[in-house]
Image 1 (cartoon, one colour):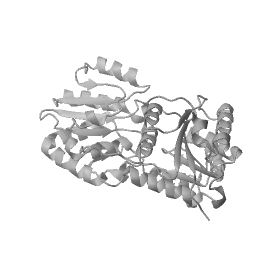
Image 2: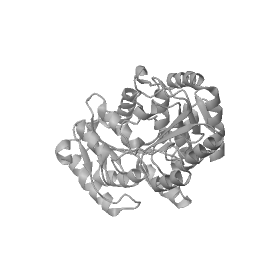
Image 3: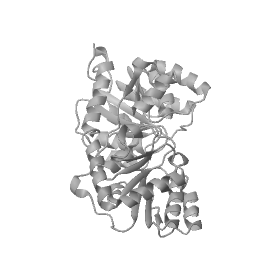
Image 4: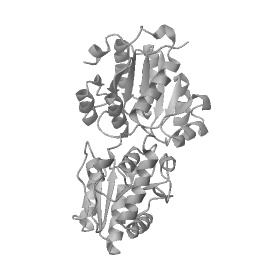
Length: 378
């Protein structure tokens, strides 16, 4: 028999910025119910930590090493979980899965849920480790069919333990859409400035478009280790007035809404949160056909999918988009908005998670866990 859990600890590697952190913020924004959601980072905090605190959510950052394996992180987590006594530990991402599942089992947490937020690039040895580790989990959530399919096909997770739950996305109001300039092509990208997101290829594509006489303007919104290389490339190509790097923004939609097109040239993706947010802003999108992108974008209808986002391939599809003209792009953007509207609602996400937690919560656990949760996180 099952019961309603008293509290759930969501464990992440960090609480700064990114798709997982944004998901936790959306979860905390939902009306409170009978299940208390608490948020913990193995490492440090930052933007998401402050946002969660402003929403009144209990937050704790342990400031421990996140690299696998970290005995210090496991020890700190065991101590915290024994104080919190949650009914459920829900770990998000590889580092959180590894340390969280071990610590939760040692601390006696009744329900243990892991979640893969991308398609892993595990070695054969790592696959064996995670296959063994996931045996202690009640289920393993994948954030797209592509992720759950990989988990099952790789043998890390048996089919009966793999569950797909799409990320939540908060769409802006329709009337918030702003007109992009009639001349030229204004393009947006939102995400971590990391090699896996492939932002350098997008800057190279912008240079190719300008060489073809197409007036392009590129907005790369985010932070990461590729920033210096991007800045150097922009200077070397003489693109200072064409490529903008405003850094991390809590509300990137303010920039996205003023663009004609959104581009996600990632080499790997689990879901594509920024992709859905851009479609929700009424923009057609260009994306690499990796991870969850083919589950979101209908090529030729709501945007374009590329097998590989090379600078030349990006430049060609962006030129084709520019030749359609602003009105046809706007019409495609309306179809993009319609394709995601209602599909990824945060309220539905919260309800799906809590149904999952209740499914695995034993009746005897009700009332035995979650006591003094807030004081333990203070």
